Length: 542
Image 1 (cartoon, rainbow, N blue to C red):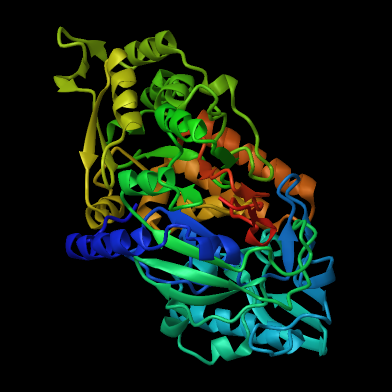
Image 2: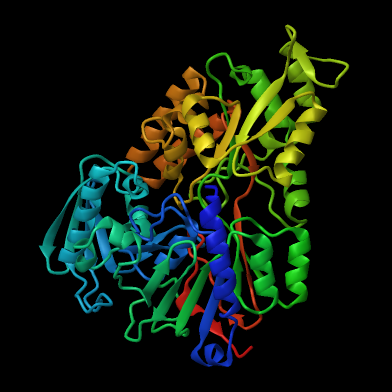
């Protein structure tokens, strides 16, 4: 995760401490039905709440309740369901998506939601992606060519090439529809909170690194079927605070100054018991997209260019111990390259079983012999792997280091700044690295492991031996051009097999997002991509 710049961090922390001390649930807040959320720290690298630019999970939670999408996604099944569009048709060649829009929707500034508004949103997003191809929303818009207004409430989105993930993309925050007035503003203005949506809340303000405020929209009446409350939100406002320090977040929650404690990483066993002793409920959902995987560098004479060494490393990781030691006894054990909430997930349980003896045999066969120091050596060289990580090593990193030591592998934990980590990935100066993205469609893995679409082409290339790269790219192509679910399932299933069989990805743990909710918080529910329907939430008197 991006590190905080020291000066900015100190300022933000001082501001947060002051702000949140003043934001404890007063009698006025209780009466006015205010919800206080304490999030992990803000994104200091890309400060933005513009839907098309955002990948920061905490901002996407905010946006899900301000800006809505043509479709929604069922959290239980992954099925795409109506929202701002009441129905749609997809052409046989999967190049034309015709959406029939609801006629009772308006933006919070009074503008009508209609086909022209949708065309403005998609055309504006395309123009922005052409100016800045690296923007996160560009991957969701892949293949989009233009929008056509068929009639006032029918719009056709035309693609130049198939994109099997496009319909799911229309359900995400990244392709949420803003009012035409928002697109008349600059991208920077939208980034700093000048956004107008159709959602049950209005973004009153956003202060980078400090917080945001959402206020209820009284005339809201067009929720998707995923939301139990079809009308205006039960809450009057939502106060959001960004707090990078775990101890500060936890303290505020335990003091009753935050109603929802929402960190980036899962809770430890100790924290779980502490919060539950205070009557808190623990909300958990695996984030869709890739699991937390380590990715190898197989190129330029690196030690992990040897498949036997990679397979040995795969067998040497005790994933059950990781889940239960680093987190808690109930924490799910990772079983594949993707998290289980990802459509077309295929478990690889037996292939990822802990087998240190098997790892030892593979290393012996590869010519790596254990020395008196307990590590393996070959041709006078120790089996040492450099793992680049940021911003700091975790208990899990140390655990994996210990597990690999048992079979004779020396894992060096190389802690870097975010800039150094990015540079290391770009130059190939690592043996292992890790990154992730969140989206409820397997296509998201292309942004990591397909050199043609990845944020780091070097990382994507290095994770495979040449023959495996060619196979992976073919499977990515099969997945994105498929016109039927069965074809997508086959392509992404084979891709998951390949990544594990070639040890091109080493799953470590399921990316579970957790939030602790105070006893007065009722009806917390997850969206398909791990966000929350705040309009469903009710708060009782404290």
